[in-house]
Length: 576
Image (cartoon, rainbow, N blue to C red; front, side, top):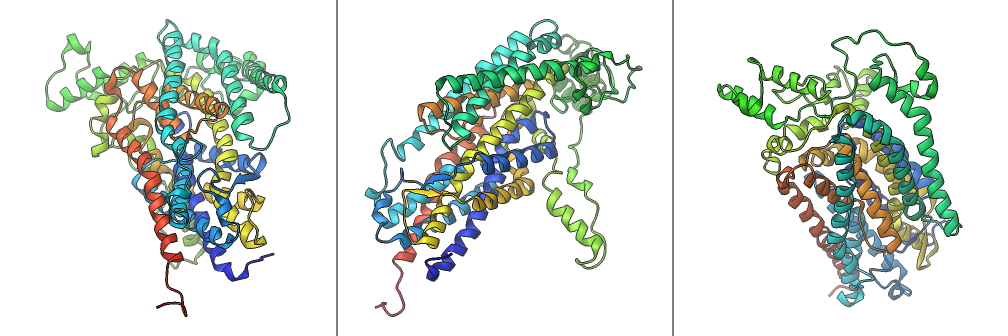
C-alpha cells in the first residue's frame, strides 16, 4: 500500500526506466558474457539465448540477493537524506534514468560496458547534484575501487585465461594424438571447472548468507567437482567415444543418457560424404596457407608451392577442403558473406495487422529476429574500421584438431551456464537496487541503509532482461568474439574459466571487478597466446576500453543534470 501518494508519478517513471535498465542488462551485459560461447560455435545463437534466459532468471529468483545496499551506500552518504526521503526517491529515479539512457546508447553503438558501473555513475551524478562533490565517497572504499577495476580485472583475468590456455595448448592440443589426450584429460577438466564454478556460486552468486564453516564450504566445492567429474565419466565419455573414435554418425544428442550402454551399440554403417561428424569450429577462418592461396587465386597468380605446400589447381574451395580435412574438419567454402539468417522468417503476409497470419508473422519477427542473426558470419566478414584485416588476424592463429576441440565445447557450455546463473543471482539485484529504494520510500515513507528487494521486482527485471537478450543481444555479440581474436572451444573455455577464477578470487579479496571486464581481459590474454601480438584486434580492444572509461562520467552527467534541473527548478507560486 502506497504511503506517499503524491509521488505516484515518480514511482511510475521509476518502473519504466528500471525496465529499460534491465532490458539493457540483457542486451549488453549478458550478451557479452555469451559472445565467447557463440563465437566459438560451442552454442548456437538459439541455444545460448535459451540457456542464458533460464539461468539468469533462475539465478535472480532462487539465490538472488534479497537485500541490497541503497545503491550505493559506498558512493553517497544516505544519512544526509533522513529528513528528506522523497529527495532520495527522486534521486534514485534520476540515477536509473541516467543509467538506462546511457546503456541504451552504448548498446546501440556496440559498446560492452559494465551495467553496475553505469548505475554507480548515475548515483554519483545524483550525489554531486544534491550534496556536492564532498557528498560522494571518492576514496578506496567508494569510487576509487571502480577506477582500480579498469586495470585489475582485465589484467588478472588475462593472466589466468592465458595460463589455462597454455596448459591446454601444449598439454593436449599440440601433442601427438590430441583427440586421445583431450578424451583422457576431460574428467580432470570437469573436476577443476565444476569446483571453481561451485566457488563462484557459493561466494558470489549466493548473496544471502550460507551457514557453512570453512570445512563445509571446502567439502561442498570438492564434492561438486567430484560428482560432475564422475558424471562426465559415466555419461559423456561413452557418448564422445562412440562419436569420435567409432565415427557413429547416427548417434543423437539425447543418447548420452544411456551412458555405458552406448559401448554396446553395434558399429554404424559408413558415414555418407555429406554428413559431418562434428561442427566445423574453424569454418570461415583461413590458415595462413589458405589465405595466401585464396589471394593468389583472386589475383590470378599461381600460389608458391614451396611456401604453401601442394595446392590444387582450381577454385580456392578445393584447397580449403583438402587442408580442412587434414585437420579433421569439414570442407569450407569461401566467397561471399553468408546471408543474414533472419531471412529464415518468411515475408509479411498480406492483410491488416490483426489478421491471424499477419499477427503470427509479427510475433515471429519480434521474438525470433534477434536470435536468427548470423553472429559468427558477421564477425568473419566485417570490413569496418574496427575490424580491418580480420582475415590476417585469424590466419596468424594456430588451428587445432577439430575433434579435439569438440571435447571443450561441453566444458564451455558448463562454464557459460554457471557464470550466467551467478550473474543473475548477483548483478540483477545491484541493478534493481535503486528501484528498490524508490519502491521502499514510496510505499513506507521510510529510509533504511539496507533496502529489501521484493521478489516481484526481481521477476519483473528478470523478464525485461530476457527480452533484451532475445531482441537485441546479437548487436553486442557480433562486436566481440572473433572480432577481437580467433575463437574456438578450447580458447573459449580458457577465456571463461580464466574470467571465473578472477571473479572468485576478487570476491574473496573484496576487490571490485566487473564480469564484462574479466571476460574481455581473458579474451585478450588467450589471444596473445594464439600466436604473436597481431592475433589481437587492438582497435576493438581500445574501443571497448574507451567505453569503460566514459561509463561513469556519461551516466553521471545525465543523471546529475536531470536531478539538478528538477530540484533547482522554479515552482508555481514560489517563482520570482
